[in-house]
Amino acid sequence: MTYTNTVLTSALDAIGNTPVVDLSRLTKGIDGRILAKLDYLNPGFSKKDRIARQMIADAEASGELRKGQTVVELTSGNTGTGLAIVCGLKGYPFVAVMSKGNSMERARMMKALGAEVVLVDQLPASKVGAVSGGDLELVENETRCIVSERGAFRADQFRLQGNFRAHYLNTGPEFIRQSGGAIDAFCDFVGTGGSFAGCAAALKEHNPEIKCYIVEPEGAAVLAGEKAVYPNHRIQGGGYAMADLSMVNKEHIDGYLQVSEAQAIEITRRLASEEGVFAGFSSGANTAAALNLLAGDFKGKTIAVIMCDSGLKYLSTDLWKSTV
Ligand SMILES: Cc1ncc(COP(=O)(O)O)c(C=O)c1O
Image (cartoon, rainbow, N blue to C red):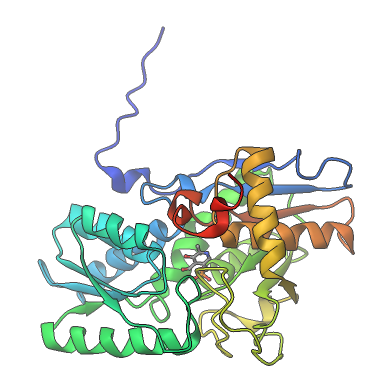
């Protein structure tokens, strides 16, 4: 036997290069394939580890982030978890600012990883488990205060190119390599739009024929030009009904898809029970949208989707409760 030393120097090197699985059980009887990238297998159990590592690396390289400086970010939990890991390993104190509407597993996890967690109340009309654009504004205000009080570096995932670059340099090219380039379309439920923007840019650079679709929740499809009549949906991590996402190159958008909360939940549960893919709401939304594509113009084609985070992050929600 020959031995290869594959020991990594830290969990930082365990970020990315996640497997891609053909969801062939879910697509049984359907003409076409859905290739799912299991990004919940990252150390912080979400795709956001990638952007945390890239934003910090970029800020170090540009000199924007000084040795030992405090890092602050607004998070629905996943970016915060990634930043808690990256900052912890690199020696930067990290403050995560999060809405009380997000599941508490996330806050606990960030604390365990060494972060200081600041929780912000929701608007009176909002519900736990459904963070609206208005709730996010409150979190944004608190984040700005903390950044200025502490002279901190803001790892702003809505603004920093590291968010885009993480997916442009890694997630997208990984998809191309792992699928042997055989991708016809990519669809992605957007929060900041970083994953969509980075993957779409990489995929289209590889083959301009690959079609890229933005996925939004039914009732909050503002990017598609609709009114937000249901901003308090339960698909955590995105669908914030923000009319503009600065990171997204509009030329890369081939269309907009909508998924209802109920469809996202149903498919998230089927991912777990039929595919052994234990992921969160937005992964279900991505897969539901991909199924819609296969049922329409993309019959017989291959659709790429990201499994954004782990189902473990939703154990306190009704995503799983009602199934036992
Ligand atoms: C679980 C989950 N899904 C989807 C998204 C949206 O990803 P992006 O911000 O890259 O658009 C996020 C972002 O926070 C997320 O946490």
